[in-house]
Amino acid sequence: MFSLDSETLALAKTVWDYHHVNHTLEPADCILALGSHDTRVAERAARLMLDGYAPLLVFSGGLGRLTEGLFAEPEADLFARIAREMGVPPEKILAENRSTNTGQNIALTYTLLQRHGVSVRRLILVQKPYMERRALATFEKQWPGEAVDIRVTSPQIAFEHYPTAEISMEEVVHIMVGDLQRIMVYPAKGFQTYQPVPAEVQQAYESLIAKGFTGHLM
Image 1 (cartoon, helix red, strand yellow):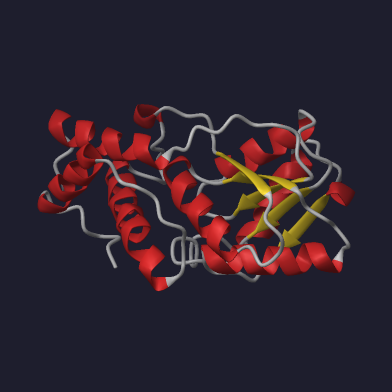
Image 2: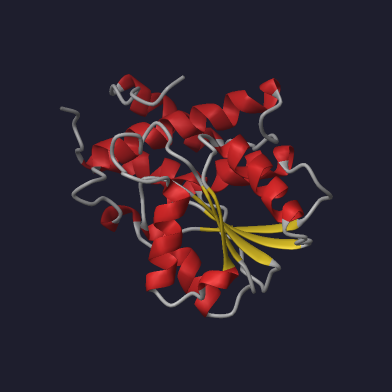
């Protein structure tokens, strides 16, 4: 059991805020939602679609480390079903259900769009709140086609209200710390674009590691 005292939560909130890129959304050619264990990502993407932000909704995700054994079907298929149940027409949904990481999400989605003759100049990317920045950095580096105007968003939920019965605050902190490590390490490996990390965020990261939040580190 890890301590979630006020100091720890304040450090975690600093990292949470850094992971948000705070983009202003504009109409796009398609909305791409990356699969995960948080179905609120599907709900956010479907709501944007219903609000007229794009004519096409794409879900990407097979079964990853956090969903294998948790979901009975690929993430993209589950997310697509949620969108249909919310009223998104089935013919406006595409699903890529083989990818197991963010890089594959992007590469296989590009192939899917090419196969359907969809040209993308503007794209809205939907991800979990604490993965906005890493999703952006990965997309910028690994999108195979011409550069696109990408705007990233996530479920509009405050840090203190994000945990659920299935996703604990402790798990969120472990994952945020691991994702921040990847933001710092992956550019040198060619996986992501460089993202500056302010000193206070670096300090919060190191303090959380010292407190034992290492479960998602590489």
